[in-house]
Image 1 (cartoon, rainbow, N blue to C red):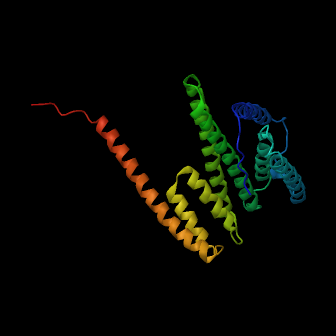
Image 2: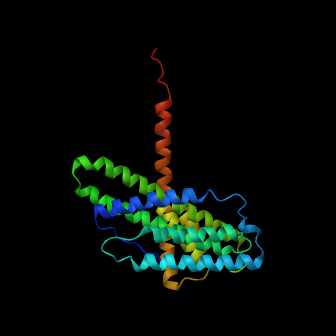
Image 3: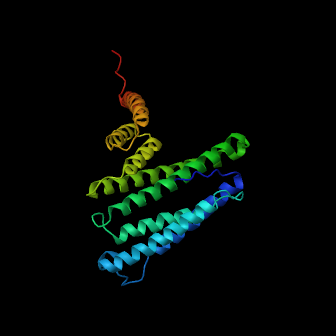
Length: 251
């Protein structure tokens, strides 16, 4: 289950952002490995299996720690959630898509969890913006935009990983892959993608009859939203064309 954790105070949001900056620096530095470090893809099957098992255990501990601290009045420790994401990413660096497609679905789930975390942080900052003095509003708007972009980036990355899973899974497709991609598309306001994934979810046979009826109503809603979005984009494009067209000189 994905956890949405409310951030309660301005200081909590600030602490979270500081932690994110620190972790980004750590991740950047960690990319510069020692010369001669073996490529994990070159390990034999037994070595790969042992390494993946180790990474899975580390990932689960990180996620358990994050969920255990979710109700802490002092806020959550985002480091645990990013640790979970990074361990899942490392598994995909060990095993190729054809070797372990489920690893890519798991990485996609981790990315979505992080996207939802950033999305929740945006909501917390928006709540602060409503009550903030005018002098603080510009800085809060910058922080909101920055975290919104990070949320959307993770949702896009998640869908990319789900595409890899769907292309390489030779056995039955886990319906949760369609469900995850659907949720990402809704966050991205990609209504055509939401519609396609919902249709795949219906076709998977995993829904109850009641859920199928609800899904069919959602298909109509997504189609209407797609149509409205296309119209709005066309209007904006026509407006840009009008602005670029030089006026006709008067005779």
